[in-house]
Amino acid sequence: MECVRISYNSYIIVALYGIKLLSAITIHTDNVGRKDSRNYASNEIYTHLTPYGILPVDYASLEFQVKACNDAFLLLSSASDLNSTFLYEIVIGGKSNTAISVRRKYGGKTKTMTVINAIVLFCDEYSKLFVNWSSSGRITLANDYHTFIDWTDPYPLMIEGYGIMTGWGADGSWIFNVEDILVVEATCECECTADVKYLSNYTREDLFEILAPEITKIKQDLLVDKTQLSSNIRRLTSAPDNRQSSKGVGVIAVVLFVSLIGAIIVIDILRS
Image (cartoon, rainbow, N blue to C red; front, side):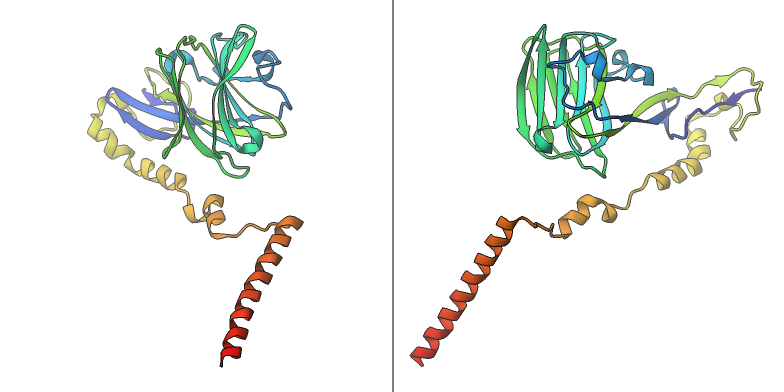
């Protein structure tokens, strides 16, 4: 008997030669403190992504979601085990969550190659980002709306391993989508839980029809009410500022405004 074993609750993509799954893997990174690749061995402080099935041989880009208050680091290493002094380090939310930068470490020397001012991290909300690189040395970091980093290394490094970490007071939560393939086995000793048997006998159109209810259900589960996101709420809410300097500026502005209105009224009264 043929059966399908699905190891994750994933959303389904029907490909030309079969069915692929994008399995969402969540990885938590603890705060490593004031550490980075400039003064620590990267394999000692970074979480290696290869054990999670995220392999450089399969990718020339990374798509991920990250939730952290500040300082989320992405490592592109020239060593598969991350034990190398030849690497790129992308710092997202540096300088108290106000900047994004790319560092290049070549041997024992580390240099910041490009930096921009941008806020993309949030303590209570995931940010979706894409990192791409090419053999020409071009590295980009973007989201669905804007490209933040677009820098080309004239002497590009070979990327063989990935790592992630968070530091400088921040923990982090990361989500990566890892591609799996549904396998149709010739025999199945366990009890098959899939409703579709003899999957290989169906055409692509048949599979779309059979899987339509499940795809619809999963899409509904993945929907997010944008009106409840903190980013939307922040746009509609004035943030309190309890600093004495801010209160002082506000009081001065009110006094000047009232004085101006009062002066105009007094002048009108005197003229009449």
